[in-house]
Length: 124
View 1 (cartoon, one colour):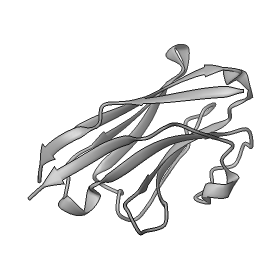
View 2 (cartoon, one colour; view 1 turned 180 degrees about the vertical axis):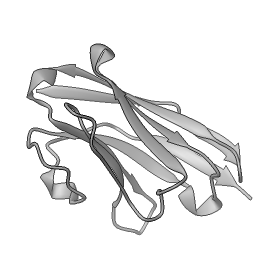
View 3 (cartoon, one colour; view 1 turned 180 degrees about the horizontal axis):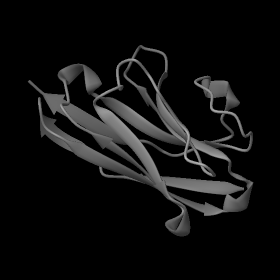
View 4 (cartoon, helix red, strand yellow; view 1 turned 30 degrees about the vertical axis):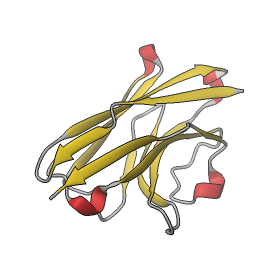
């Protein structure tokens, strides 16, 4: 099993920045891809970004391209999401995810492990 814990959510004004962290523990050698999804009440979960644990390939949603940067520190089993130029529509619960498969994917059902989520609120 793999455990994922998110850090770094909070309240920020529009135009500001936040950095989310996700610490992985347990059977981390089984992880090949990690990523972020977000969800607001009444809406489906939305893919944000993903990174291949070995090699560093990344994929972003259209809403995150140019504003968000995903990265990882394999030695620390930690993944990051740097979010800049935040907008009120970025307000959501952000979930850290991980999968045993090696392909980057935007499909939530392809991810095997989920964190509890961290709230990000962007005020206008």
